[in-house]
Image (tube, rainbow, N blue to C red; front, side, top):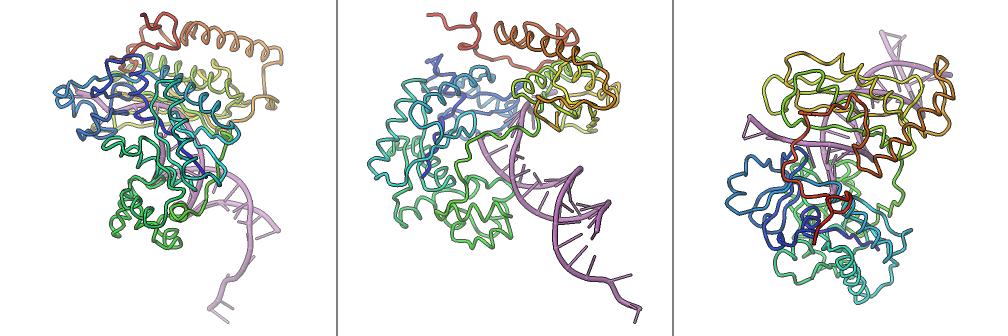
Length: 428
DNA sequence: TCTGGGGTCCTAGGACCC
DNA sequence: TCTGGGGTCCTAGGACCC
């Protein structure tokens, strides 16, 4: 059987750990560029402010609620995630644990636990994680991943009302009547793997809740919702289609894209942005021991205005690379092809594909640099990575990066990076 | 007049996840 | 004025092979 451990309102909870004044008050966390809501406290959820809603449309309501509004602080959330996951590794065999996202992990257990044992384990895990990290979690147990997600959903909903289940719900030992009751409480849209498009399709056919979907023939599900659909139906019926799936498969593509704080028309500023994206991509590639053989650059105007402009250009490397200056050079070459004076660019980015393992460099026939050059490049990047890791991410950078960076995204309400930057540490 | 059967690989677009 | 970023998987269709 599986458990899924899911942090409650994760980004909001991270903020509350270091700023207890935020407890029991409405809090929202904004996406990059302070665009829309990506995390809401229970108080805010109850007031009906939807996930992903743009901030500017709700500004008045949010102000009236005396709601604390925060920019996202990924340095903090990433570090808190590491703390939660390492606590889970202490509690449960890491071989039977799969980190699924920044705030979730699946755990696999033997099938023979009694209902009491299941509850005990749940409460023990929940208490220990909260004790060690300050982050509240919900835990769902079931025989399939999809049902574990359902159980977790029930736990979360319950915690916002009676809190009868105290954050732990198991469907492992439910009899058919109980299961039916639970599944009927889950809207089709909230089933793991059913998104906007498919839930609309299902609603049109009169399928509104998870129980109704579970009663569908899985071959019909296959026809209407493709292979995923038939798996979801089987999983809702306790037939396992997904395994724990431990190892994070090596990435197939890496991207770095950002919206600008204000519209950009000037090519120098776009070049600075390219320097930042190249830096991020280079660092990620080196960290995962990979190199790219092709990059694609895009730049675009806002999606929400008339007269869109959206162009791509790509560049194939003769020899795969993770050397930041090479990536930047290629990106600037692409940028020249798509830049148009006068266009109000709002967003740009770089995708790196054709990823290969960094180790044995496969030289192209026309490759110019020598092995000695490559050794030099490697040690420059290593030195840069080390300095930036030790003294902060932008301690040393390419000149093209610029120093003003007027285009940088908005981030006006960010809390201190309490756990990763020395001079932002909490003072008591 | 009549035109097979069984594959692979690649790409674009859509749907989904957090 | 103001609308995130980073991924995966599946399918259909086209191009190609013998």
